Length: 254
Image (tube, rainbow, N blue to C red):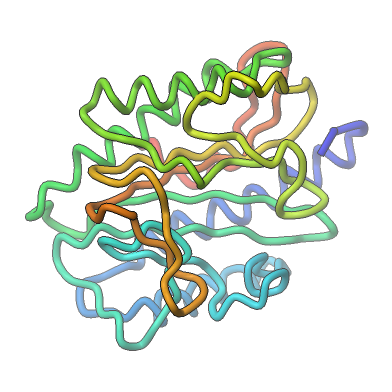
């Protein structure tokens, strides 16, 4: 959305702090032996305390309040009593919600406990690439150039990007224009970031796959060539200088 008043900025800051805080607390709450359903219900209680509504649950009828993806699930993992967290699991939590007509989105991947499966390099690459991408976004920059930066940095780290998942505009709805802030460059895309707009920037960094495919449950995405995927996401306000990171309360870079 385009921020045109102080009240709109305040609205976006409030919901962004809510989803960021929820993500941080869910990450800290995750423990070995816990089900992803229990973790999801914990997150839903936090959103309720703030008066916020889960975006995937309200908007798409998603069977959960947050997307919680484990190990080889790339995105949109469904919380379940049958999915029990284990030491060294690669976990991704994606929290998006609405409050007072404003929407915000954020996510992060992390390793639970000891990194016994050596997932941390993939997690770190995703976090670092997101930070570099966001630091290069100002009004007027081509969206395709940020995609080029993300893919180039992924290759430097020995990884790939998922090409059919993307960041997006956010604000008055969960998904707004620009709808495809991709992790690679499409040369024909001449669209540019606009000053005073709010967008969700996210990385999808992978070990083997370049395309995410939907499983039979109609939600869960996995890589077309297997392996693992990490995602990190911030909602930001584009300015003519360094962006304002609205979801910084998630502390995904700490």
